[in-house]
Image 1 (cartoon, rainbow, N blue to C red):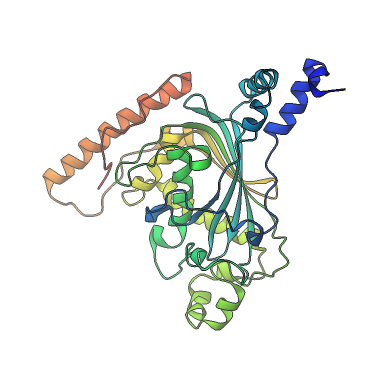
Image 2: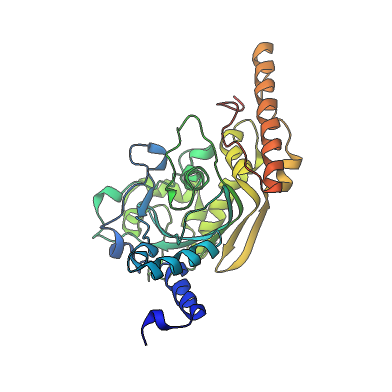
Length: 339
């Protein structure tokens, strides 16, 4: 029996499984390095991301015949906005993303984005272009201490949407055109056969480079082999995210985009089990204007407070529209919120 002779419901089910199922993730970095590109090449702030170009599984089927076109369109119209991205955390070599995108969002609203992290030891056959693109530095304090890379990955999603396929945002004028209801970050147990002496560098680099001897003292978490690699990674990510979550005078510029783009929650999980949940909606309610250390010039203080109130008013109005599922203006009324 030909495919088009099957009952409509059965055809729809087959096409749904073909188009909307998750893309099989690469077995290893080596297996997918050839086609990986930086989605924002030329912008230093996304240098850590190496993207496998998303595949449009629907397009070839739509070109078969008019009936196939109609059937595929029905499947795409019924597809929700729950997206998945596989992220290979390749030590010192970046975040290697593989997206499953049956259809792009038709509105500003996305139900969920589920990110699965897998930890990999870099092997000698990897291209040199990837090296040093992911730096978990323990020699710097604050957001630069390896946390900036995770923040940039999250910002790329909130600013450019699934697959980072939206327009490139201006680095000094960030905006979030999407409202994502829920983000899930799930770190899986390492299955690549390596013991992972460190998460900051390859095992060989960690053992032979004298600089890493200091790292063992400054940040033992990343290098503590008594702790499982997936636990080390989630704790390091949480350490940085909690800095953003404070929304103080130093972190508000970084954390603001989370308040703008995430409607409800961000969940950190390990092997599918909930580890820590952040309620974004509740955090917006409790947020206060940051207190700046030192008095500063009175005129500067007044200007800072004025800009913050302008942004806060816009944020509250935006989130009210998000609660109602209405269209909102993604552009901030101010370029810098609190400096």
